[in-house]
Image (cartoon, helix red, strand yellow):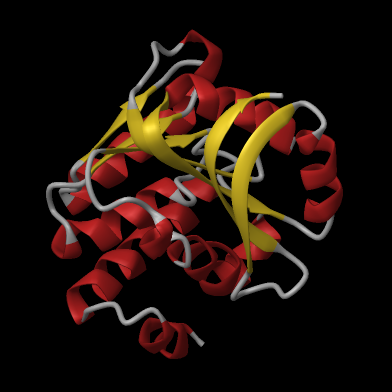
Length: 204
């Protein structure tokens, strides 16, 4: 399965090797801290790695990519791995308030020599980042995520939010409080889920 998805996302052998090393680190650390559920370790490639990889090409190629609520590094670490050779000037900043998870993220960044850093603080406490991209996966409601994006995106930037089967309900709710342009891309790993590309965010 992993090789099939490698071809789908057209990643190099070197990038695939880095993703494999990352998967090994997630598996090792998950035995100690709750990075992902132990049940999903058996399907880490489709459920986590390739699920994260699908958003890479949606982001602006320049500037800072801010990944909020990074947890075990999905999607932020995957984005940083893919950018390592494709776009080495791309800086990825991962925001994760759990100190143990932040330590894990720093370990991955160091071992894989990624152009990334970790902010071990709550998103609300972070100074405005002026990012060109803000991403999040399984973090909060769309309305709340838009508030974070509004604070941390530079003018003209875009938000990329990965949402599950109820994404249309979240979208309708968010549109009552926010004005924004959006594109909904069907997830390549789960046909009931969506990747929302959002721009022009301001309060309604």
